[in-house]
Image (tube, rainbow, N blue to C red; front, top):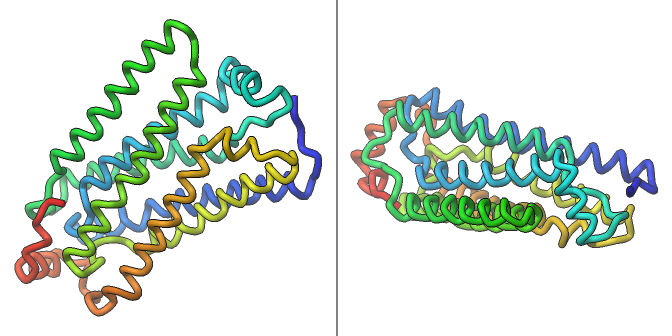
Amino acid sequence: MSSWNSVPLHVSYEALGWFAFVCWSISFWPQVILNFRRKSVVGLNFDFVLLNLTKHSSYLIYNASLYFSTAIQNQYRHKYGEKQMIPVAANDVAFSIHAVLLTAVSLFQIAIYDRGSQKVSKIAWAIVTVAWTVAAVCFFVALNNHHWLWLLSIFTTIQVTMTVVKYIPQAVMNFKRKSTDGWSIENILLDFSGGVANYLQMAMQSIDQSSWVNFYGNIGKLLLSLVSIFFDILFIIQHYVLYPERKRKPETTPEYDNAAKSSDPTLSQNV
């Protein structure tokens, strides 16, 4: 069994992990609150939410399995070395649970609030269907030979794919509308902070263990951080640099949404 060599690095690891948990968990709330105040989801891309649910569900399966299953932990150490630390912390599991719940709340808001003519695209439905079909087939393959670590690598692939794909519809929607109204920038700022903290947390463990296995042994977590940071920077540029003149004070009211939809027909277009 592996253990920490440096107490300061261990404390830093835990602190950064829970800081990332707080940032990422809180990042879901501004959008939910904005939807509730406006009683509208116009400006929030539905493809993003659906793909995000698939991404976080896959991430939850990965984190919970590797954190709680002794059999999977043994397979991990057999592959990467008996002294290697499991690269999933309690904060990873806690975040995943919270993320799935809050994303489900966003989907519920889409169902009950004003959404104009927006709807989930057929492409998004197809991507989600393919992802879960592949996961189901791989589960039965793993069930036969107990290659659970291999199965988790499939969920890692789904996570990373969904992370890359999910941001694109929202970025394109912002570009077409030349506006970020209805899209919470607080969500992005918190997500960016959590991504940086998550990356630094992995670095603390690698420095302590004098090994980079923590990075390539949990490539999904690494790619999730880097991809999220990239798109967060893109959204920050869209909000503060490219489209700042479109920000309106009364954007929390349904009347504003109706006026925006009538003056900008691209709001109702499906991305």
